[in-house]
Length: 369
Image 1 (cartoon, rainbow, N blue to C red):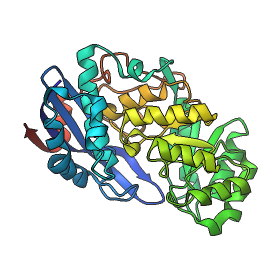
Image 2 (cartoon, rainbow, N blue to C red; image 1 turned 120 degrees about the vertical axis):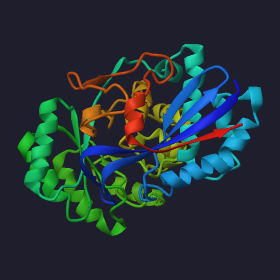
Image 3 (spheres, rainbow, N blue to C red; image 1 turned 135 degrees about the horizontal axis):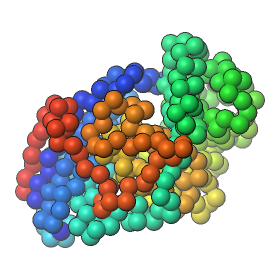
Image 4 (cartoon, one colour; image 1 turned 45 degrees about the horizontal axis):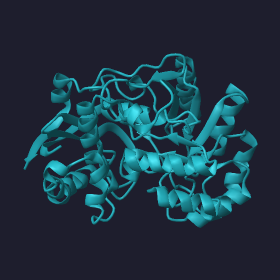
């Protein structure tokens, strides 16, 4: 397979409502897509980078620059030797920039599998045709507002609720949701690194609510601190931002810092590395689940295929398109009995709707051999 050209598409896709975490609040999903053209097929992928370097050090305009100036020249140079599996080794010299690498690898893999008439799910080794769906609930302005959203999501059929938390918005919201909806609700929290080692006693108070997990409570570089926290509290500690590779996942597991792992393909460099993290975790008896970055249908399709692997035993953030968007840029993913179907078509199994892409597009740029 030979890479002929890549189109980078920048879009502003409106969210149905603001999504607030401990580090940002957004009303618009600003996103970069990669559309690759090879000599045998075309492929699509979505970059996970945000507008600002807040979730990670990457941001979408920076990712686009890295792709154009550093990554694509090496991939064009592969000529007929291009494969998705060759992308990571070829680009290993470039430190970091995993989200930029992930979107290119994923688009090339999509083209490769479309040509081979194989689905993402089959390629990755999925054993399910639908996955249970959870929903991530952002930080709200008030407890009544929070309850309105949680009640609505449960009425829609979501099987698990994840509450974003931060200092000052933690114990009381969790307490209210647990007491209102009962002990059987699958409930977890996500701090996005908002706490420190000084907050262990505060976080221990959450033990009384029988949570599935607490996700990334302290700084992503403080893996040892997470191990200490895991020893101190009863709630299982889940790592997100800390896990950027299979090697780091292995180390975190051995340290006792990761009792559960959230796998986000964009954060770790793509779906091939995600599969390795899945396998490392499975071998160690550590469950995993699939996180999200507010993806449109292009990114959501590939995430659903990943979430169908055997060790994804917890509901992920692979929610329906309607959770975030009034209008998605692909045919929407729909929640049915708490589950979402895994695409079965070749590659990621979905295609963009051209007129909707054009409506939301801010810029489109072709880079050719």
